[in-house]
Length: 419
Image 1 (cartoon, helix red, strand yellow):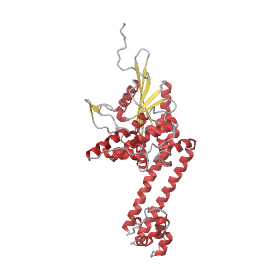
Image 2: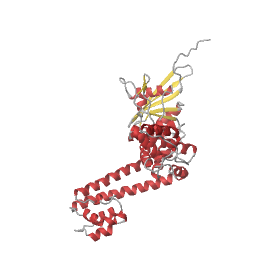
Image 3: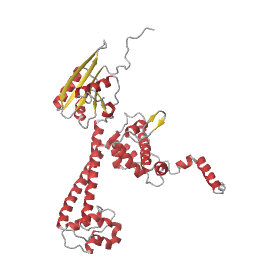
Image 4: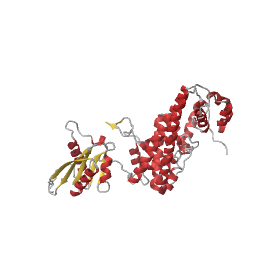
């Protein structure tokens, strides 16, 4: 057999490719071209991040017939570049942790060379970049989440203000911002020198009507003009944020109207409501073309155990993915799912909690929910709860054996019940 002249260990996957090191005000691009003779041509250019300069970058890449580009996901600074080159080249967005360069001689140009070299040999793993439509949904759902957190913050500020004025409405009313609570806050803002029992009675709604005396006592305090001014400011902000959340919800319903059937099937899953169904689809998209299996999406979301083995010994299986928006959503959905009576997830959670603790158990439930959601989206199936008796019936023989042993230890004999 003739000996091959090619002694390279790592083969070239992309003969022409480009690595881009992106920053806020400029970027460095390294383009590597492999000739038929095997020689390499390295071209390096620096560009500003203004749109006209990015268009010049795109034309430079087209001029050299570059089919694929790699760049690090540096904050939001990669997005202007992606806006310009999207659709013209295959874009590989990589996690900076996965391509960390050996320290010592680090410059912007050497970073771009490093990226291009790794890309040339196919050693880069790209991040998930959803289509533009899904990215717009994602922006809206994440903004809605921020508004919800802000709303909760201002509601807590209101409760703190009432405590400082000896107003204890939230000690009687279960929701300070319910109908009764808001009516009482309007009453406090009215400027009346003294709140009477009849005023409180007119403000009451719902089941709290049998607590008229307690509610009247809770509204008595030292509510001055200073507190009135701050309460007015807080309530204006709360109302503004609530209106913004309503606008975002309406916008999401309009944009996702073509996927109404998918959203409806997702809302059949235990713990998933309208808001969480929109958030899930916005994070992973309505098709899941990028994820070949439920194991792949579980690993990406960080809800499955990690692999950490050395010398045949398994160490901590903590997932390396610490922050993922989908993981946060799934954990919230899981907490809602395990509270539903008669559900499979409630039974599974309590079994896992007894052995592994509540935090690990809830992540395991989130993992199971994600696998269920994957098949609903990918295969078009509908959700079916297995029921709380599923685990018991599946291990019926083992459960009977354990009961017989326990009865024998206590001095009893277990016999089947007559039909």
